[in-house]
Image (cartoon, rainbow, N blue to C red; front, side, top):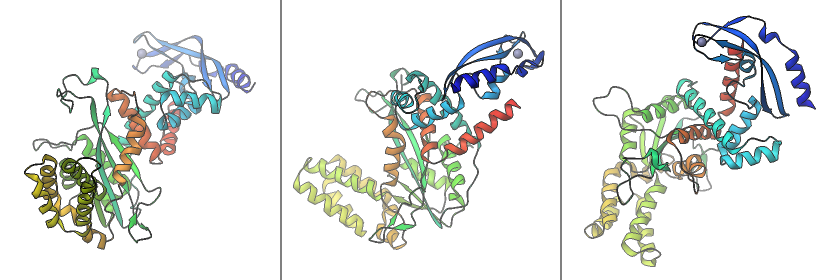
Length: 408
Ligand SMILES: [Zn+2]
């Protein structure tokens, strides 16, 4: 009923054919060429619109001014339905999103259409993220920025010739790099800093972090981290902490972008590394191995890095994992001064970065049977990061303002 009322009201209004010609995107004149029908899926149900159609002889293209005014150009979904698709597909798979739309709102949108629409929105968001910064003042006197990478499964056709970690040297994944910013002003029962709820934002993409000496411009991911830092006021704050696992690209980038920031190896990750070495030496599930790991964890917590290095050295001649870990600790000693960091009330662990990577990337993009194109993965990553960072409403406002400005 409501759909019929809206349909009748819109179709009774033929003011969209008032001009005999309109300027085409190519610069030439497009001529009015009759009214054309198109069915739009709205939250009220399907409505069939009859809109004035303008055709351009010069570029053989056509357009309907009303589609622009209503925000349905190039899509058969109303803006409200498009928004619902974006919000659900950010959180769950395309098939689940389609099901939710049907069950909760009674709106039939097929999984393929969800995919196309969500990817389209994600591309818009990625573009918006690159151009709109809107810096905020720092949320606290100390701010934390973490970086991490994780492999996302990519379709074989897009990986041809890439080197990877498969036994034959081929690749099954591409690395998504993530930057996350948060504050940790709150304290737990032991007085240790904990991440403040709602303070976490994310930005990620399949991008390179490597910048060569010969290049003037920052790498794509360095630019992303820089934008996120500006957005959050991280670059303005008194005390800056950069957290990461031991990966060299993270520290190279931190030196490049945030000189003077305190660099900390995520304690959670460091301990995981030590547990992996214990498994490599003693075998998985071994009681001696567990005890050995506990001792190493304690040395790390207490800042006894010499003892820790000594223990690694005893195994590094015969065990590859121990040798790698010896390197890792040697390289990162200055970033593992945990008692000192704790005395300064800095956030050292938490696994915030690791958890962020799982939440922002893995739970949506690394589910069984998922294989992405690079463009598709990047679009959904942008959509999801936007949603999880509490930025979707702002984006939607800008998008709606843009659409109505175009219509006017
Ligand atoms: Zn034209």
